Length: 116
Length: 118
Image 1 (tube, rainbow over the protein chains, first blue to last red):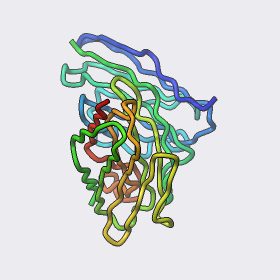
Image 2: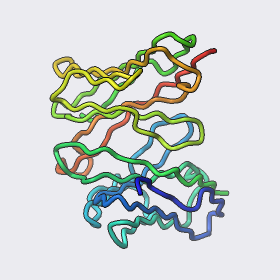
Image 3: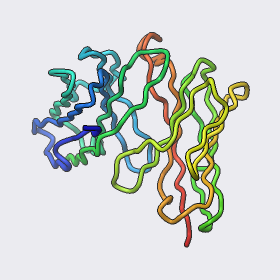
């Protein structure tokens, strides 16, 4: 399996809802990432997990809560989001993270999130 | 610094022509430079990458060149086809200064919208 998968593909939620995004990879990668991408912009890093430990949090608001239950799974829990949080949320994985030598990151198809 | 500058922001070429996209980076310690292609509504897909120990890499119609001294790298697409139309992002592997300078991340350029006209 050489793919990163994400569910759901689309999500519409109200500002008071709680929802979760899920990401899975079976490539044996030890690093997983969450990115946020607005239209016509590059992916913007949110969180990095390395060996199931959070290694980077790019000052993301606490209404986004990441979780890495095991080396193959990555979740993003959403609560009390704002309309400006509407975006494409991309998950990625790589062999390693936090190494001086860069590793290729493979992206999932993303979850298109709309906050009403 | 963590900057990656990418030019041009839009590029329109005729089918069969070549396309060149250029990026500059600020962190002289950067050693890995991937290029991603993102079609509308799809995920970014790696098309080619280069490491700092080589100056050029080629894969069929796609090539990337790296000038470490000048801190810039370029994507070259020859014999362009309509299916090459997409947004292309360059990136550089850099220290994440935001998290204290001991972690690494990819810093992306702002993207180039390439349109290949048939």
